[in-house]
Length: 250
Ligand code: ADP
Ligand code: MG
Image 1 (cartoon, rainbow, N blue to C red):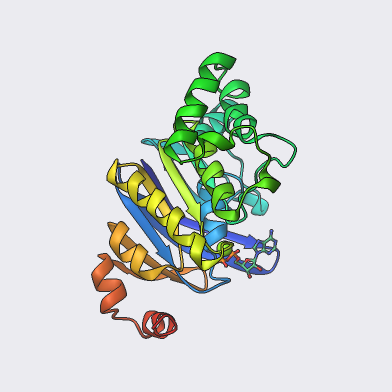
Image 2: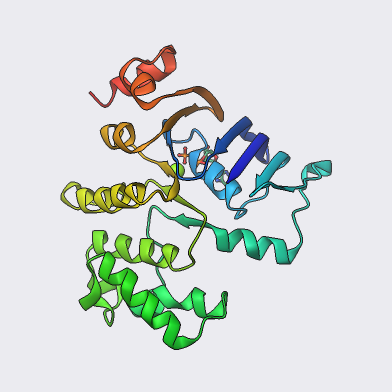
């Protein structure tokens, strides 16, 4: 579904991603863990092309996006291709990023109507189905400020799913939530995994990551320090940096 190869990204003098390569297979869940500042969000933003990479290659559905890293400026795929990528590769943000002046229903159906060209009736129907799936049917007319953080995050998951993405990325989807609201989001993501949704999940919820992921990457300082099967990386890490990081969660 996605292959990133030798990705480098810097912000001025700061090299944030040093040489990242990873593959996301259909129906699999990739978990990404690592300390704050290690480049996890930047990696996700590059993967969905919200951010340009400086060098390396990204392959979407077997098709290469070609980069020209000259002068530190990447030339991305043509506009049409970019739209296709943003449609197929959805990102759920840490802080929900809902439109505050749109109702829940409008938040979910906006992109299907304006980007996919769905009819209003069709978009309302599928948005209501998704809201029902998220347990938010009766909140369709509410505005984001009227919802709990957990409900807002479920709306943003519904919004991402409304585009029918091939891969869904989650950037610390529970870190802005009170602990008692974390569980409802984790169970939504678990049910998507059970439906074989292809996902990439950055999280600090270690036992969740171990349960839901097929493969775990531990990042530190812009590099992949260790990766492998969840039980191996989380229960018996080999690298000292992984051990030090995980010891904070015991
Ligand atoms: P993580 O998600 O693992 O906490 P980030 O990808 O957010 O890490 O950040 C990695 C590093 O890149 C941090 O040092 C951060 O300050 C820096 N950084 C992130 N975004 C920008 C930006 N737009 N401009 C400058 N520096 C940035
Ligand atoms: Mg982050």
